[in-house]
Image (cartoon, rainbow, N blue to C red; front, side):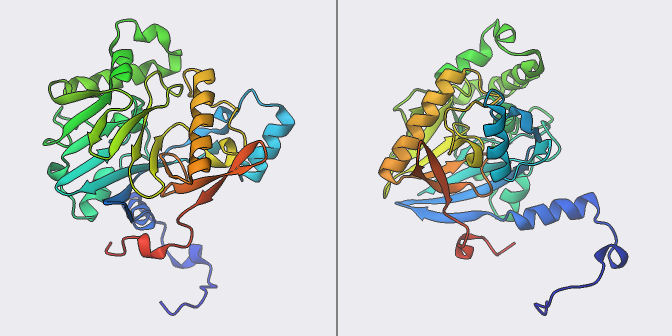
Length: 318
């Protein structure tokens, strides 16, 4: 590459990209992002992205305020594409994966295995898989199409409250009609690890220095995870789904939250703590790779990305 701007009409010179070429381009664009945190090596791997209607974002907010917030956030169309960022933590001989992605849920998901392979990480080398909650974009990558486990040598960790919710006999009555397939999928994924799962409650450790935090509301037993070192790192999961909207407006609601009141309380606690302690946050659906900080800004917070200028953290071996 000469570094000069290509001023030709690309549509007349280059053939349209094939699906395989587009998938490869996505892999290159979202190469793994690595950084050190205390004694741990953290790698963020992309599972791709969702396509969701913007009507999910703060549906109850005053119309004028909501419109202004979405405009500021650059969310001007009827849909948006939140990322799916999966943390992998290396500690000694342990390789700990947080969530398994959304294979088969939406076409834009299911890229985790591709990124692991491109990074030279074999599925069989993952020693622990930690599940933040039972939604399809987080756990439908647990089981392969033939029923085998994608990570066959891992021990699995699931929140006890979350496990009980998705496996209760009347779970179908607790969900909107459109989300009932979520339960079918969750029960299949959970059943596959039943013989090797450890139930986790708030305060429990996965390994020394990594422990569970109660952040219910998005789902009844949603868990986040705190990683020791420095000012702290919190793997947030889905406590805050879209930082450009919910950092400034933490009391607004999100359409996929199970309990609005609990979700708001968990979101406010997390952001208050992160801002007070300058803890690093890692959000599952934040712009890739989803690593940043919360800073107080009036009645809300501002999202500060950690990675905008850190080219050194990207894996250029792809």
